[in-house]
Structure formats: structure tokens, C-alpha cells
Length: 122
Image (cartoon, rainbow, N blue to C red; front, side, top):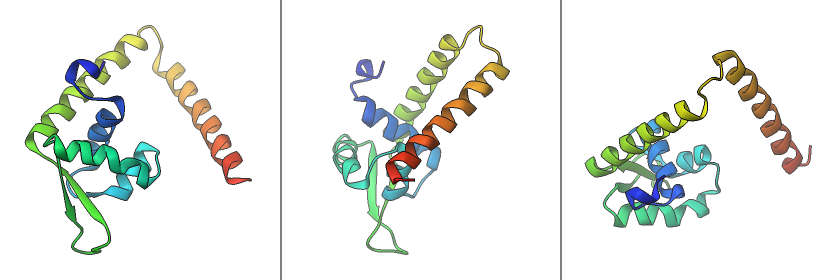
């Protein structure tokens, strides 16, 4: 789906999540919502910067941290990706009620929490 836009899935997800977080989101916050370790996100951020899709600046409150902001082109691309995701979601869930989706989401959240607990050794 994203290959037609000339970007990878990891790059696309980073753009969409950054758009949802808003301007000035910290790099660590983006890593958290994407679900990867911060060092794993560095390459993606570098690709986004080189592509002119984001700007990375030092956080004025904490100079050890970086804040990220979409450029106009990055914001346009993020909106396009989000629209495609919405259309895909509608297509895939056609015929499934909101109640059924809610049950599925709650079940998957429980499974996700159990996996996280298992990884944490609980």
C-alpha cells in the first residue's frame, strides 16, 4: 500500500504517528507509540530527514532530547497515508458491527498486555 507512495511501512507509520502526536513530539515519544526501541527508530528518522519530510531539533527544555516536526510535504504525505489507512480499515471491517470490533479490540488488548507481561518476566 505504501510502496506506491515510495516509502516503507516503517517510514509511513512513523509519519502517521508523528502527525497524531503533533508538532514538537520527542523522538522517544514517537518510538514509544510506534512500539520500537529508540535506537531502532534512528534510521527511519534519518530517512525522513533526508527526504525532507521532518525536521529534527534539539529540545530546548532538555538538550539531550530531540523534537520532531513534520514539514509541509511530510504533513501532506501523512494525511494521504492516513486516508488510505482509513479506506483500508473500512474495506476490511465491512459487515462487522461496532460492537464486534469493540470485543475484538478488547481481546487483542488483553493478549497484547499478556505478551508484554511475559516479556517483562511477570
